[in-house]
Image (cartoon, rainbow, N blue to C red; front, top):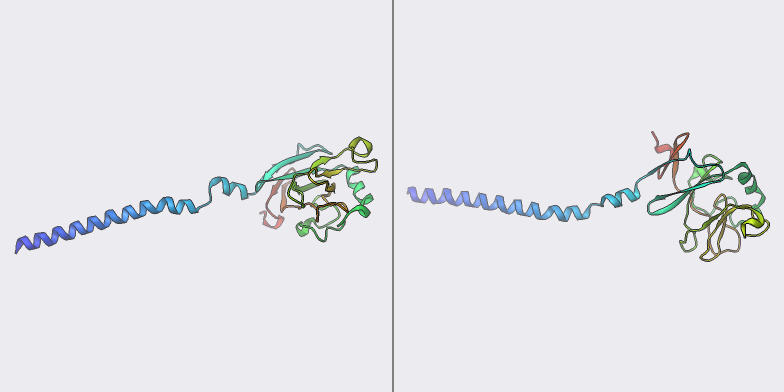
Length: 199
């Protein structure tokens, strides 16, 4: 009788130990599987907002940063650059930016929160090439005597002004995209965060 009781106790002990080892093995096997479904640190960083110090961007100069794997241009426009925007509206496909991608707070004549600072995704809306800056004006620019500055896409010849607005009769269908962004101080902006999200 005592042998049967000892065997049942041993059987229960072995069953409990075996079940515990099995569950531990399953848990260990699930860790890499579950981890593989989580985004990597690089993927999380790629979609994360980017904070940029704009204090060192001189008037007339541009800084390029990366956000979500795309170049983002920050241009400190001069008064002349801003004044010239009005002079070319008749040459533009969408001068009021009604058909273009920008947040409501950048749907204005300068396509920006502050007139002097332009923030654009530096990707052509035609086939995704990256245009080059052409800030020189007139004959010095190799863009023609009436050129007042902007961007030129060498892939297929699309042209954009210094508000990212596309010229008529070029392959690009819409103006360059204005990403969500906000000023978090006088000299710092956060790309990827709308102003109402800044605490």
